[in-house]
Length: 268
Image (cartoon, rainbow, N blue to C red; front, top):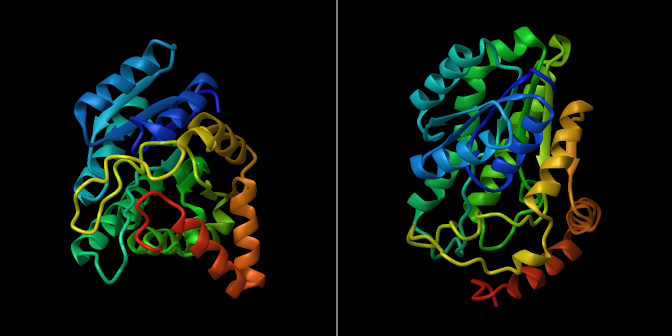
């Protein structure tokens, strides 16, 4: 990945920041995006102090024009785009019967349409360079999680989009990776939306017991280098994907019981 230009959406914290660090220390030139300028500037400063060539671009992935400008900025700064990592994402936590539909739409706009927009505008460069498109999906893209209507729907949609893209680009030597972390320590649960769209604030899960963002980023980096099509992480994640395929009714019960144990769970 030395001298490759890597664009990472949502790169100012969590898995995105860890990916920027991982690719950067291997010699890649990095452009990260984020909505919050202060967080973005802090991330750029942190990465720069580690000797990483990095540029921060303030953008909202849910806005098509921001994604067009992001691609143009990467080409202007670095002359090309080799890898796009669609990492930006938000979650939600509420029963479908209680959630305001605008919340689901907001999640879809970021997690699904944000990927479409970013990929659309980076794709010509990636095709030219026979590069990689990476989608940071989730186990929730294989197995619906109760209380995560919008999140699961967006990740199922993302998995389908990436599968289509991989097939369409088969003879163009473009690599497409669907990366599905299990529960990983990051800010996504703290920023998760509740039924009325307000921010959850605190994670309902024990973050300290989860895979770290840095470990997750290393797995994704290696899968990108090896041009893998799919990456499913954590033993728990692999198990539930397997059970959901072969024993779906058992998977329903297991998933229900696991999610019901969360703090203030919407299901009991």
